[in-house]
Image (cartoon, rainbow, N blue to C red; front, side, top):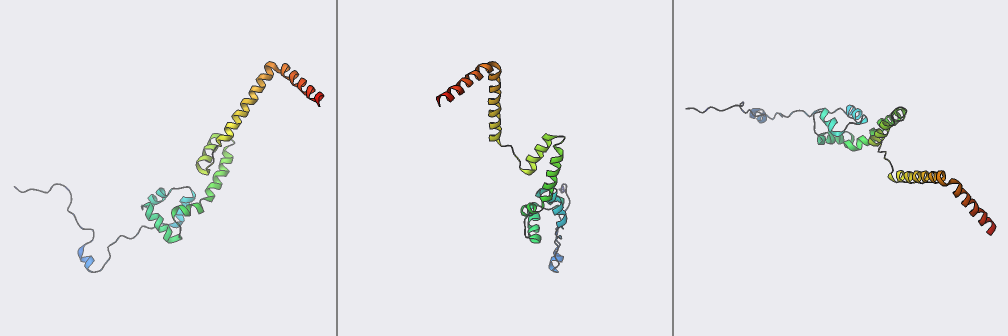
Length: 160
């Protein structure tokens, strides 16, 4: 009984031997990367993975080809060209704060690296606590505190 090969198609070499012997190169041409398109997507905030994926190449290939064309890698080039997007974001963030402050804060943290200073928040909380404590004391014992402080002032004036 003959054994039949199961499944699959026959394996055919990608480069045929007769073409190789004739000195004809059988490589696929490099995929074209359009610099203007890369710059446009960078300005919109696209990542290296997104840009490379749009051209169907790897991130390393994209970076290498950009270095060949511009002398700068993806990250260095993006730092130089993404200024307009940040300016637009600042403008939109300013306009957005008129209607939705939380969205403006979130965008500022994500894109512009803005953050809340924890020390300032703690200071503000402490100052607010002290103020509210003073208000409570004045509400409960206002006349007594004021009369004592007036007496202390008068005494210090008479001592001098």
